[in-house]
Length: 248
Image (cartoon, rainbow, N blue to C red; front, side):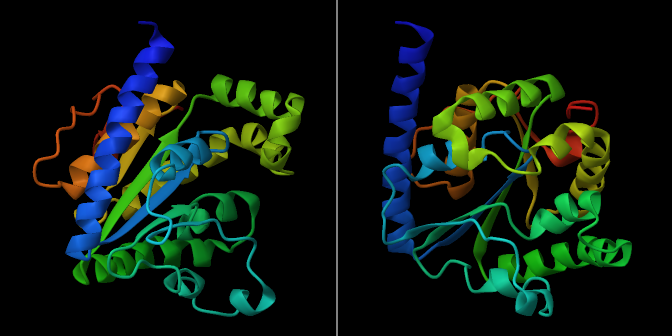
């Protein structure tokens, strides 16, 4: 059996576990919030597709908010995200989140240094409120090396089927690589907590990353009787152990 067939077999097995786990979570009335962050082209869309492929359409939502309106810019920063939080039995996946203010906004000058600093203090408190109200918060940072990102960004431009993935900010991802690295390190250090920890995923190998993301979700939800292999420690690690392992 080849590597691709092995991947499909393992993915299918994990997706079956996801279906069983979601069925159990719905019965238990769990509220599950999965936050996916990371550099451009790190594989958020692909991971979300595999997580939700066989999920319950009524109890699963993927949220990817557009640029805030003028009215939203005048609101409490977290306000526009609150309406998308899961209700009992629901799983919500945020394809980028309030952590725009931890990375893109300060690097691109879309927020002030004061707003950025306030966010780094407020995010853990906001997430504490979610966790204290029994929302399961699962946060992923998808990491990628600079060379692999460059390859994927170039591939997007060449592939007509990836037209909607192309962004005017793609070039900035490489040009401001060091600034994004610094913002990432600051954000992870300030917002990694026991109630809402960050889990880092190395994504240069997309397929291996996807399998490990699903395994981590299953371990966090911890359905009785679930049979899931351990995550690969070379691919998955908590933010507080990420020093020297993140792409520089």
